[in-house]
Length: 183
Image (cartoon, rainbow, N blue to C red; front, side, top):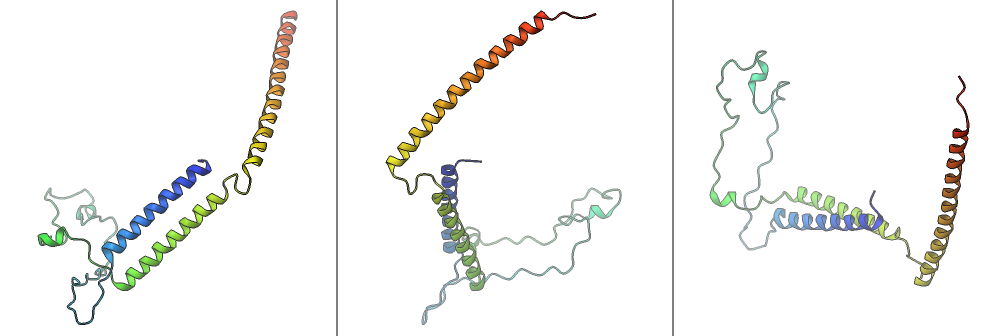
């Protein structure tokens, strides 16, 4: 797990990404407003997706009927596309996506706003968990000196334990060398 500052940096990066995505969504998918007395500039509304008539038989993928035949396809002819491909006019291919319906757009705005608020709350939580908030610089320096002193004491104790371990290893070696093997 990363330290708190890295987590905070990642959370801020996520917040900025969410903000950019939200602004981009609003810019590209907003419904056109109606101005009284002016002709509408809005493109025709996007058709609603057609409901599926029947679920495909199990095992079929992408219109591949060879899955129904137990020994594979009977011939090597390519499968025909499910729907004819219509060429779009050049100006429609390069344009932005069609505007959302107002109800879908508002629902998406609420979801984006909720995500932004949750991310902001996570950032606040990370900021509040950072050490040093509410402590003066003097008290932080005092605490660092205390920790340095404690570290020196622990280091002295570790060095003593290391010397004792070396003595024990030497004593064990002498003991083993002094013993005879019994047949």
